[in-house]
Length: 212
Ligand code: 5GP
Image (cartoon, rainbow, N blue to C red; front, side, top):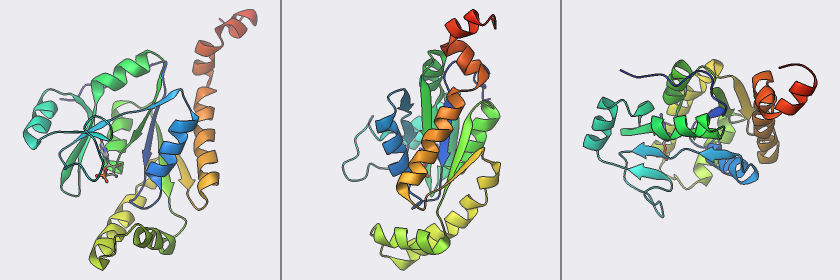
């Protein structure tokens, strides 16, 4: 059983997906730095921490048993298995933030993004595309994944992921980082200018114009 979120929340929910190497994390981190009204959600995962990652900062690192218990308790807005590890977005934190009018961004895989859209149709789904397969391969090689089979696996996954972009509301092509960031900011800004959002945030203007 998975209970949907309330339909009409004052906050906006943004969901960003992309194949590995498309620049999703760098773009979302830059967006978060520029936009104090936007908060990131910290996912739960069963994978082990990498490098300097800290529990409660990049992810909540939990066991498979703990993860299964959370599924049983209907704690996740969405969850998915990505390359052998489980990842999930906790419902409680997001629900509270959206109810308080905060905007939240999820950086999750396409399976999770499509689940979120089902649970919460108001969510804005954004897919980040690389400019070409050649450029994606170059970016993966530059990241230090020198093992050719690792790169080939990621390229194969990327083809599956990119094929899902048609189900998303917006597409940003990350050819030039600054242009892609501008596009992301524009999407967030446009959502905040929707009638219902303006009615909430600019109520004095709406009242003065006899619109409410
Ligand atoms: P990584 O292990 O490299 O941090 O992430 C692997 C993939 O899992 C990335 O595509 C990332 O966006 C995705 N991911 C991270 N958190 C979640 C989550 O809560 N749910 C889903 N469905 N995917 C997630």
